[in-house]
Image (tube, rainbow, N blue to C red; front, side, top):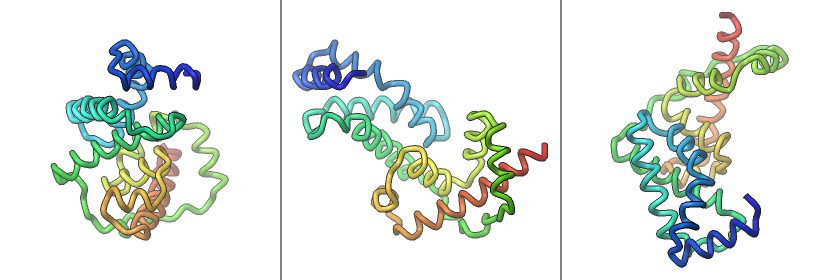
Length: 182
């Protein structure tokens, strides 16, 4: 969507224009639903968070200071909604992450395997990670949040976030190599 068009839609949506809100919804709904699906175990929960997320977006759109950061701002809202539901249901497992650390010997070999894998296959491997690792991978690599932001969202230290990401990468590398052996 063009920047000027987006800014016009935001202005109209803030004033309560339902058509502008619908256009913003249509432009970003698929990306935000995919984000919700990455964090939640089932479709029903993902759709609940998706709905709540858009309600909050339109309710708080007037607080958006920089119109160019709309997508980033929306992602934060949806991720926070997902995390609130997860915390509410106590889905986050505090398993000792270090026991999952496995080492990969050849980066070149890993790269060759990755190039052969479909995005769906990589996504399936990420979903096989323990929930804590999966969450860090989603927040850091896919959503682009910093370790500092992740630590605040999850109530963990920055060091824990970094450590879990490191261990998740190692575990993913081993899963990728095992995938290659199939």
